[in-house]
Length: 554
Image (cartoon, rainbow, N blue to C red; front, side):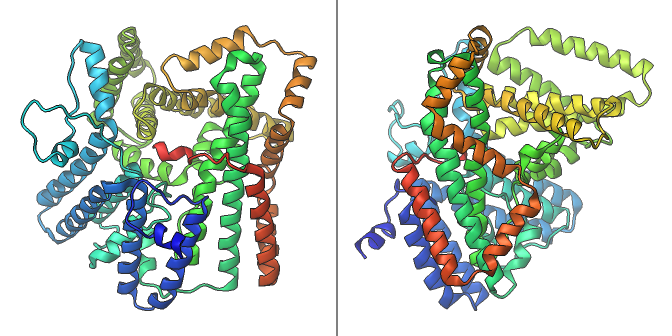
């Protein structure tokens, strides 16, 4: 009881993490109360809003006030858009709503990034004005030093994108504005997805609020299977592999032959997938236990046969958001306009701005020259250019969404270039429509290794670190059977787990679904014993090496 009291006390800075016992005690209490309250839909929404805001407070402290402002602001903006008849005013209201949401995201997540980049480029000494710290100090006199840094609110990228999609969908008349504030606040702040998604869309989630609570044995079994699968992914395939292998190699690559760094990056691809998909597995399982369905966020992404296929399978909710609210408004693959040209110009200036690679000016001029030549000699060239520009803009914005860092912008740009390349390659590739096992394997192999290669910029911190690792791999590859055997001996348990994880990932979908069906048919007592055994073994293996979820930083 003392521990439960501590969990529900108003103490920020002690987050409730899915992999900790405190969270499961919290969730147990929530489900007990939920069982008494779920019949009244409004009471249910009020209760889950309160619980979600408390959960967010435990994770991000007083940043819950920012989330509260976002909820109130976007609720009334959505209603105003719906009730305004004049189209120009509807568009003005939508623009105001989108700008306010973006300003929240930019200020809290990107203020230091842009300020430091500007200072480096123009040799200035501007400082970020910490508005919250200023208020906290009671409007101190001018000249008072404000030392605290702006703390990025947990999940700000996720709840901002959810809010923007809601008001845009209301503007497009794809959904009706939510009448009850508490139904709306529950939709945005629902605690399983508020921190790391999946990014919920109003048209998918809000209709569920009007449905009565229902949980049959099949749904219950599916939810429990998702939660256990997520815990095993996070604790074993992500944390154990990271602590005992990847972190050691990536943090000190010079201590190992170059080929070991390649194996470590392969392992990192497994780690980040298991880490992020593990979280969303748990989130979807928790939501299903409360009677709600969240969208599937991953679909065996390493089975992808192309980069385009990969981005249809990885972080599906973000990819869907970028497609519907950025790529298509820019013109998609059909057309483009002034927005596409302005966007790519801004991105080139931005890349020069943050990297200080002034040679990019010549690249930009050269591309413009090729564009002019292409217009004069190639039919429909303009359409292709618009599509390619829209793809590049979308992927670079996706990289910047993850983190305000040069490496992430480069990572997004590389994936954008790969998507553009694939659009042309698939038209001439002799293997595009091949169904042979060799060609299928080859396409998966190339795609997986390209994605792993770009993740060097995703994993390493520091502008020069990715190139340093590539240089180390190239100059000190040093493969030999003796070195390989030494690696296998030193990291035997980790490498075995990586192999098991990869094999499990590449199992046919029917096999994975079959295991869930078999689990659902088991007696509840057998299910309980099996779940307890798996969870016990997982926690025994990882001991005290648990790490934060990777996407918490985004």
